[in-house]
Length: 340
Image 1 (tube, rainbow, N blue to C red):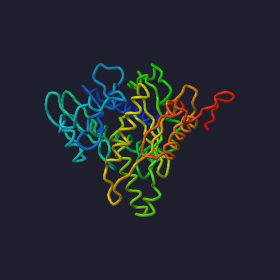
Image 2: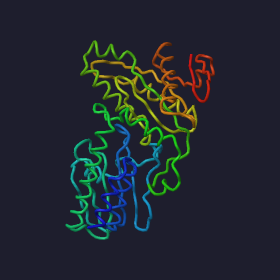
Image 3: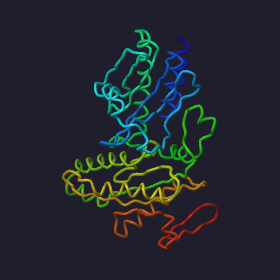
Image 4: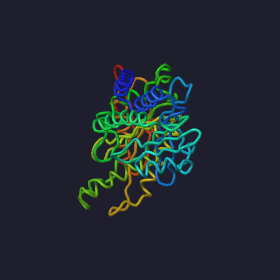
């Protein structure tokens, strides 16, 4: 019982979803000694949904592994490759399949969209006591996950909220120490961090003409489109009103511009019920080593303001605007910057 208590204490010791999933599979691996245990989550939208490995540990492994947080969606296995997982999520109940090895699948999310499954492979089917143990640990996991959602998520769109931005900014932009990467089974990569601000054009007109309920539906659909465009590891926020923020990693400005342009064109081409065509203005910037969350956000926001003043419905890089002379960046004492 003391081992179980120790694992439950560790499970709730992190306010980090990556660590939470890695700790869950590590705890159950230590308690049950399965051949293999993993958490798989559905990512992507529509017909291009895929299985993303959140955490996995096999017999003999010392720490969990995971798919890279910024993995290319096309490199992940499609849903059709694992129909049993789909059945488990659709039925929202556990499945046990005899065989060599025996397979046990349990849905992780029961009170919201059911998109993650816990999968165990064992020498023989799990017994009643083992299943009861898993159920108890999962109750703690789900309760803690709900607390994280309540404190970190925007209640309308389900995206991260503004109050989590500062903490996540530092985690996303500061390299993870190799010792911590190994412990959590994360492979975050060393690419540059980029911050983008996305602002819906003429959103006040939508609310004035169609009402706030339709306006809320636009925000919900836009958040869904954002999830489909960006990758599992990209951080998506709603800052309030019609303003959204993206924190992501990619190799260079060209790759960042392609990602943001993909979002812009996807939104422009989507038919929003009752509203029709919606467009967005997007500004983005590379995150500098000396940046604070505020300084990086302000540069991207300046680029958005420029787009708003020059036609809307396009993507602009802060650095490109400065290079063209459309914005002037003046450095003052220290690292402070003033834009004119």
